[in-house]
Structures are given as structure tokens and as C-alpha cells.
Length: 258
Figure 1: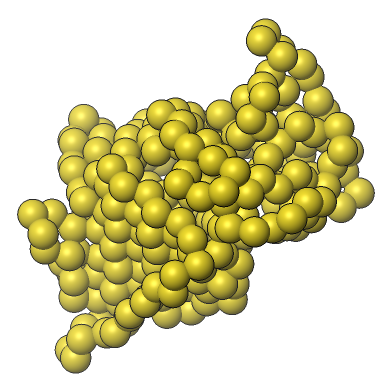
Figure 2: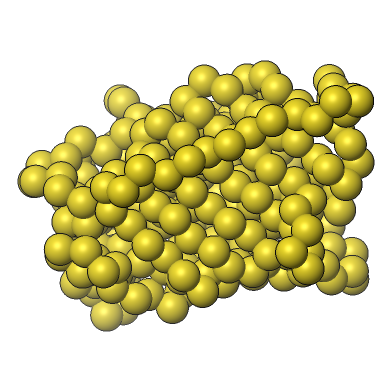
């Protein structure tokens, strides 16, 4: 499993800008949170901890690979992801606002450093806030000083778009719930495109019953790698205030990636 395929499996793909949404209502676990742009009808999650398990199916250059994935998160603090086959863990990644740590047990290698690692790998600026928003299906406002373009489409859905760091960001919002239904990132200069479709929305078992996407289909297109797709399906998603562990260790003898 190469680096790009692994990142797709983990959902570690570019989202949007690094500026966080500003809550306008109570942020008790599971309740909805409105975003800072008043004309954008988006609603974000607000729980403290998340624990999810599922499967990923990745297709690249005609080859298909499957993986079991586990995701744990403490909002705005840490993202912990593992991927493996037949109960055997292959890769573990831990992201914090200022660090990236990855151990690859398949290749006996590890990496520890900053977000320049992911930015270089994906050829786009990447941050913790982007990863968190993408994994949760949350909306992030346009960068400071940028006014988003808002279009109302069929069934009263909003499509919000704005430029950021040389790429065009587009998000399609569900009517009523305000949840992100689709994310698009387009770079006309390099012909790189990313589309994430969020589906299978189910209410979380917390006050507010906010719908959460239990499935995501990722399509990435770039000249060097061609088309890559990843279907991620969660079988279990639990949220609340119960503390979670985020273990990470590098076994002896593993080689550090540069």
C-alpha cells in the first residue's frame, strides 16, 4: 500500500482553510453548531470525543485494496487512526494541531514531524483543522478577507465556493440539516481534483440527534497517479464525553522516513 493510497484510506486528504468556525449556540456534546458566515446555512458537530470503526475500499490503477479502519478523536486536540487487514494493524497515525506521527508496520518505518510532510505529499497546504473537518464532514468558513460565492440549487441546497491557496473550494450543503453533502477541491493549473461525497446520514445518539455521514466516497485525480478512489463506510460511530486513549509507540529497529 503506497503513501497516497494509505492517506486515502485514512481520510487524510485536503479539506479547506485553517480558520475554525465560530460557535453561535451551545456546544454541549452532540448539539448542532452554526458557523460564522450568517448567509451560509451550515451546521457542524460539537461533541468532545468520537470513536468510530469501519472499512475502506481503495482503487488505484485498477488495483483494489481493502482495510479495516479505526478512528478516535478529541475535538481540536488529537486525531488517531489505524488501518489493517484481518485483525492485523498495518499503519497507525496520530495528528495533533502541530505534529504528524505515522508508524508503518508493513514496511517497518515511521515518521514524526510537521504538516509540511502531508503538504509535500499531497502538493497542497494541509492542516489539522482541514483533517478534522474532512473526517467529520464539517464546514469551514472562507479565509479571512475572502467572500464566498453562495448559490442556491435544486431542493434549496446551498453550494458555497471560494478560492484558497490557488485552489477552488466548493461545498454542497444539505437543506434543513445544513450538513456538508459534498466537498470539491479543484486546481486548474495542475489538473488536480478531489471530490468527497458524504452519504448514509444517521443521527448520532446524543442530544440534538445531528445527522452524521457514515459513508464517504473519495475521488482524487492527478496527472502523476491518475484516478484514485476510496470508499469509507463506518459500521459504528459513538460520541460523547467519555475519555479515550490515543496510544502511539515506535517499535525498536524501525527506520525513520524523511
